[in-house]
Image (tube, rainbow, N blue to C red):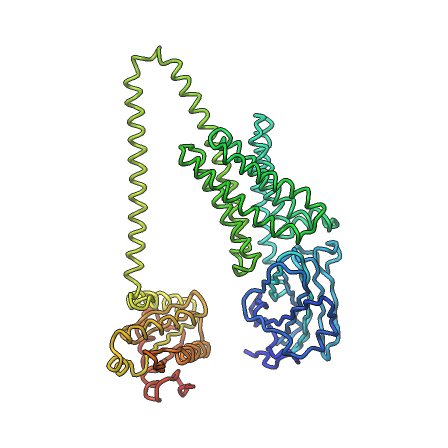
Length: 611
């Protein structure tokens, strides 16, 4: 398959391309960035800078926390096909204030210039979408340089992805359907709670409705849905809505907690702490209309995290005091807190930007709303049970004859509940023990990698799957060079440490979670890589060989070189029981690598590669 091998002038990196049949590709790790602390540089200024002034973003994410500086990004996009390619560059972070885009042709000619960002009215976007989309049309064998200038008072993040235009719109329909189901389901729960509030006139339900509604608006605004569908012209309000809804959420959540857990009655000191947090967050709602996003969001995130911890602590304490409803409440706030902490750590660039960190709040919210609904239902049931007990006490004088029978029934019910609880606990303990036993039976105790038993099973399963779908399967067999002489000279304890270090290098160098790495036996290791052609397997093997060779291994004050020989085999398995043959072929290549002088990689039809 033809690849664009010539880098764009001045970038020093190959252009980002979509291979035939590939619908999308992340750009973030292929782009370069420039931090403009002066905020004065323009396009001509940054284009005149030498290549050394740009930094390569080798990470899968681009996140630099809260900053008011300008950040310049650039990357090249190419077309290797024989037809014109219609592509989209997706910037999936809708709360950036200013996004200015230049699409450059040859000799830095500006072919297109766009102004985006949530400071612009929504209709001014080149493509009407909740995220920032940049259209590209590349002729056959054509390339474009894309330069972006970003500025925001929110967290500086730039998740960039190159998409085939048609595939993106098809995928976006499915995403919108999922979002619609989530927000529709949450909206129905809000509507139901409103009816309950109107019927019962209990402020508890009003606080709950305000809390869930604030949550939904906060999430919708964080994902750009509110700006697209509800206030596309209100840029000033859109800049404040995250502050208002997050603060309102914490204030109403605190009031809900005070009333639901009866904090003032059972925990008077804790009541004043909770009330103080409610006042602080309520004050933030007012300040949001007079202060900037950047001034309020960081302290608000800290206050919100503290509020979640305090409210969670109140639930735990009431649970320990015997409040049955507090168990649902505690688990609900725990889910919310976990999602909020993950999102906050992501915004402060302490966690990478990915699907889980970006959607942690939404997942935590869904769990919390459902569990809080269960908590309210349990609270109603508990009140009914209390009224029932009161009625029983009133009628006790008339039912003395049945008192013994009633006590027996209660004792039997409690005994059954206790028995069910113990059976459940024992079952969970047994399941945990079985999982630990399975883990121990398939792990190598010295290196921490998987063992031969696991490898045989995994290789057989991958062989069956790859044979069924006619996909390639690669096997790497590694052997530490002169390990017997190493053991004889330094002793088995040092040899064991060498095995652990090599195993750690193997675990670090694996490209994807679908690859399997195991200790094959003695000083031999094996790597199974599904969906991998021979050339790709050779590249991975060479990377492993180089990493082991570069490993600094010392014995006392002496640096001892450690190298490995690697045999590689890759093919589409001809039948489902071809796993042993794959190992034999890799073993033959390993033997040839050792015969070729060791510290090299040997593949069928190729001489060994050695540094």
